[in-house]
Length: 233
Image (tube, rainbow, N blue to C red; front, side, top):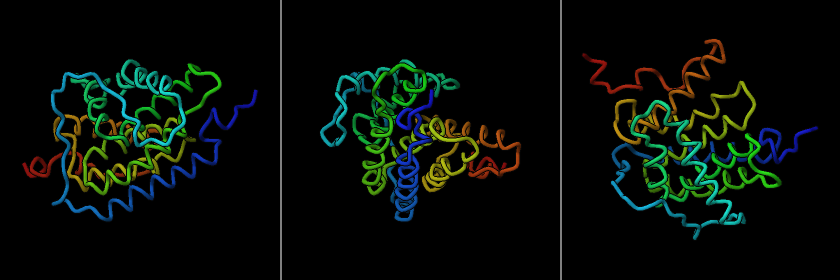
């Protein structure tokens, strides 16, 4: 049976249009960023349960489905991204940060929705593209606010795109992330959530390089993966 475009984003023209829109949002936002003006994310030890705030949303998806996607993120998606992270930043901290970052909230909902679609866990509703679009819409104001939470959002959207796209075009999905890491000065030894996000990005880089049989260079130069003071030792 043929796969409907709504079931496979790579076959839907909207996906390609939204991918180009995301690239435009990221690179336009980067052009206005100065390293001296950036605000690194501070994640507190809140003990409250993640709550959803859809006050700025334009999606028409029932809240019950959105709650289900959030639950699936915590129980199924985040553990995969935390596979090499004992502190479980994606499972524990990302939902907390998402309470104050609508763009991040819709990124994790899009990711979770797509994962459920791929696993055949939903029938008759394919919400991932609408949630992806909403996250992109909300990302531009976050970039203008010079908030490093945009790194978390961009990385999750990059993984979403790689889950949803054809093979062989991986570089286009990680270039925006690479530029954000460079501008924010985040690397594999930054600590906390941003360090966890960096290594999630690094796995995408390495997997892309392996699948291209080494024919393509890294997007983010290896010397950017660690602090410069380490390189001088």
